[in-house]
Length: 179
Image 1 (cartoon, helix red, strand yellow):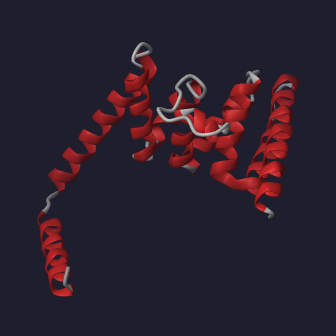
Image 2: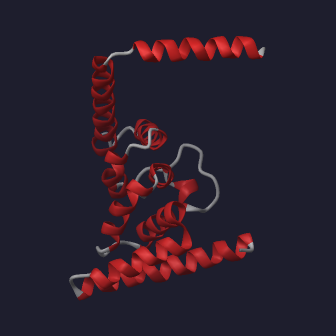
């Protein structure tokens, strides 16, 4: 493709974008909200359609749908990937990969879940999300802050368990990458 052709294409796109009115933006926002509601509903309610749920989770991640973070955390080890790769949580569970794609908006829902008594499998998947989104240093800091803010001994114990698992997992990753 020539530079002149690419420039004409870009100029045409700029012209079309400048012609869009506010109503188009409102309609687009409404369409996105409806799509998110439908995808979240599929994840929450269509327990018998594993492929449909997995595809809905993948789309929520691809769209960086922060409004889906809580339902994805709730189903973190319930929905397998369509093409499992390796033993990591990200390779086995669609919700883990989606939450990592959503990024920082997912952190709050993950930290909230750590306060509860949860299975080791769920905890490992959540640790994988926290490490993938925040990294070793920030993830550790956030967990330590949550521990300091814990309201009950049970919450503190659950968060300490999460911190121990986080440190073990991230130290293994650190060793594997040579950091």
